[in-house]
Every structure is written in C-alpha cells, then in structure tokens.
Length: 128
Image: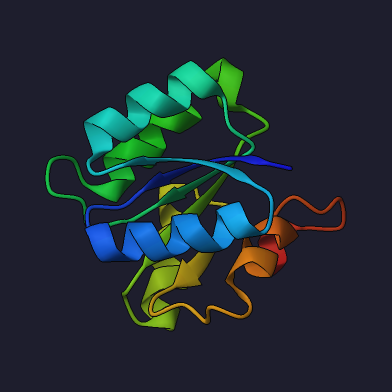
C-alpha cells in the first residue's frame, strides 16, 4: 500500500481518482489547492504526489518547485496529473521537475496501475 497525496481542484476528478486508488489498497489524501496540498505533502511525506498543473491558487510549477526544495521529499515521486495534451504535458512536467505524467481523462481500468508503476525500481524518469 502506498500513501498518495492528490492535489486536484476538480472535485469530481479527485473523487474518482481517490475511489480507484482506495479500491486498489492505497491511502489517498486530497487537497483542492496548491497551498493545502503542499501542507499535506510536508505533513505526510507520501510515496507519490499527483498534482494538477492548473490549480486555482498556485500554479503547478510553483508547487512542484517547493516540493523539490524539501530534503524530506527527495524520494517522493511527483506526477503531473493534467488535462493538457500529452505532448505538452510531457514537456511541461519535465521542465517543472516532475517524475512523469498521467493525463486526464483517465482510463479507470488502468489508472491505479499507472500510478503504482512510478514506484517500481525499474522506473527511469528519462523514459516516462
């Protein structure tokens, strides 16, 4: 079981993602904005953070940058969770310092496995 923080301002997207990840046995904590999400990430030191890049208060680049500055989060995987077109999302996630991207809308049958794949030892962020 992994501890996951999901920073997503769309309540429906957050609810679906949380339900799918909980069903797969993961502990999920959600936040609707960047500031609250950052607080939860620092408090919980999760295995994975899924962060929407278009948040209402602080942009995704700023949130990811703040997380990357924290020594306690060096092992935490940060995944962009965005509705941007995949090519744009990949480019922006790399520029922001994310370990990978999951684009929306999600495939509900594959979503939990996509998230967990970022924890696998063979994961290489240069190939995501």
